Image (cartoon, rainbow, N blue to C red):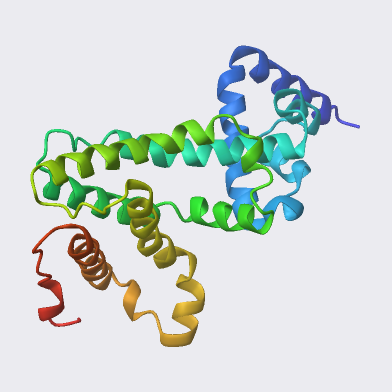
Length: 231
């Protein structure tokens, strides 16, 4: 034996000791891709360890077990999405403009995070059993409802929003357009072709989804995007 295995082991231990936070983040980044690609049952801890130059033992040291790692991955992708929403400055906008920005930003955030969509789909297969174990995700999800509640309250007070508009139901509606656009891309493209997924057509779909939400919420809103050519 040439001792290369021993040298690799010493190198890994050195990196753990020098920057354990970076190692942990690296494990989570790789695990996110693995769980999104293969699901909870299909993801392989040994492969995650190999791709992060750590070890199965070290992964379990940080996360307890495979399910513990999966739960942390779920919390991470939810945190990333909610953080992007939290950075949106809608408090300074008038209500209609604020709602428009939220719808457009949600559409873009989902389109740019296919791993988030896949993980949510996987977790639905598990009936949200692991999501329910998290104390973090419910707190994270409250932020978008609070943001929509503020916009809705201001919109109703200004006489611009319908009085029956509910923030949670509105979040469901906005998420539906944004989520489906990504979750069913493969099957939709296989059935009808990929014409809806060009950069130009995605921009049109975002504008039309925004128009439909505003038509539901904003008194007197007249959609205009449907008068434009489809492509």
